[in-house]
Length: 367
Image 1: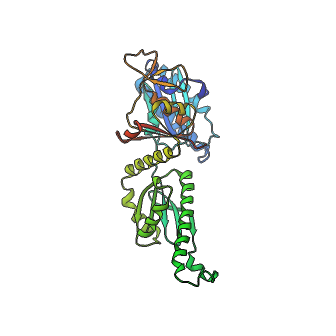
Image 2: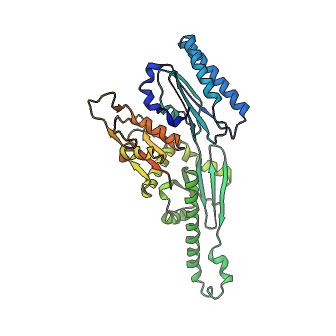
Image 3: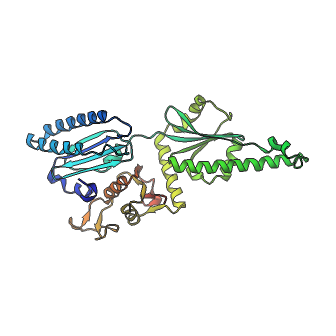
């Protein structure tokens, strides 16, 4: 069934209690990286678990009907997709498959209703970050995770004093050399800053910058990407080994939730500076319906009761009393679904963290 021609999951959530059971399956599904035989085996094991849950709680006839519908969905999965996971929703009257760009842990639920937020709760912890190692003569950038570092950029500069012999007419006065060194260093750091911008656009990950106190102060004063930096970390050795790098960063990434939430706030600030941030439910709803949501950040448990405006990209907050036939119990679910369907991402943060953004914000795609 074409997912774009059937009701959204959030809308069905209001109705499926009358058409139980509601089966939700969230599972890794990456055909470009996993052999089809292995994926098929995972799907078979998933089906066996679903069947067991159904038989424990529902009549055999209904369980068999649901399993037949599930096997039809499995047989029609797109094994040519470049996505990383899928979410399957199935009831006696409804079925839908979402192909997602986010890595997930498998979750199988047989319940009375669907919950689109379960996809976000099932996301794999992404303990990845960028490390920029600075010195006066070299920069290195690494992609780091919990145990390894992979060098992704390396660059060198040639300070003015190294080139003094090439320009004897300019080097006759030795007092000119320190100034030329400073100019060369500034040029090199501006070059590094441009590289940092490219990497941040490519990876959208937390950034740590390491260096001696002087080089960090120099870079901090000229960078255009200060909003993306989680922390400047002072080191005494300009050329630490990878093992030393691990030890240096360990206390700074120990509270990964804190790192993640700071990075999300940085991304919101950066998007606002580029006029790529939607704040307020009316603007967020409009951009999400236009498939223009790259990253939705919201406080956990935030809900928004809305009433239909009669136009897809317009929403109004519902005012009590309201009719069950004219309102959406939680419009947030519709927004989450739309963002995920269009290769975006969704993150929950602690209550109160987004008070300056009215509790929810949407980073738009760069176009």
